[in-house]
Image 1: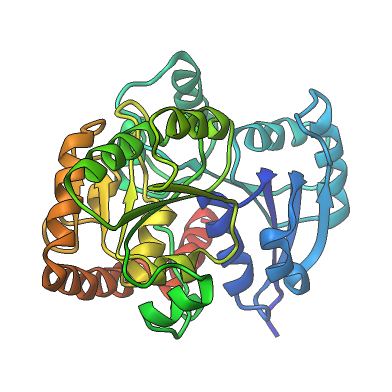
Image 2: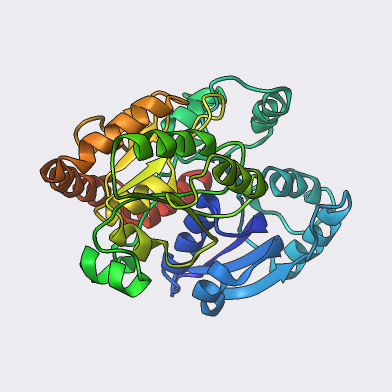
Length: 369
């Protein structure tokens, strides 16, 4: 019998973001006869943990709002206790802690840095530092080719792309009408949804300005904002000040986003021009559910959406172009049907859960050489 490979996964805030979802899909999907998985986090909520509790050999949370300088010593103790073959980190701080921990552990392990989740157009001083730090890691994983390129990692040894994978089995077996009835959404409205953290990275102001423009030009369009974050209060105030409360609803954090995507006609992902998306889970989940996406034209997004074929791209910050495309599609339901079919095909072909698991296993083997 082949000995299992023990992997210690590390992450900071264990919430409901894209990197958390990708990591959880790996823990859940890795063959249990080949891998033993452990998880170390800074803090967590219960959204994803319940899915993998029975797959974890151990779970440890620092229960801190912020990392403390000597938390790496706690990590080092966990490493000596678990004795992992591989430490796989999904946050910059935990990656750097893993480097430091090597100085304080008796156990030797291979380190995989999975922190490249975006593809910034311009690197800030902090991101330039992170680009420099990648030279200390023999194995670096990004979720897009654009991400590797943005951080100057393309062509270097031990650099890999691991696209997000979606489990098609998560999609509710409900029609759009049935999904709306279950969620008590109005049957006659044209529903546009955005699922993303309410942070400055996602540029919610653009979709809100588009909502204001749509309200003036068309009827029965409802915008749903799913997610939470530091910008929520200011965004809700903006909606109130611009008298859009009947057009825009904030749904907060949800654990039924697939059902919401099924109920929607379109989804949107607006991002700031300087952030640069990697491969967004929100986009992949929406397309898998058959809900076409209009997204800001970011480097990594181009690896998922083929403009005009399975969705649409608009310039970052161009709320008028976004509004025009929404109204155009509202008036062309046959186009939405075609986009829906192509969107689903794209995810099944390129971003399946089986591909995620298989590619990760190949990366592990290559990082072991």
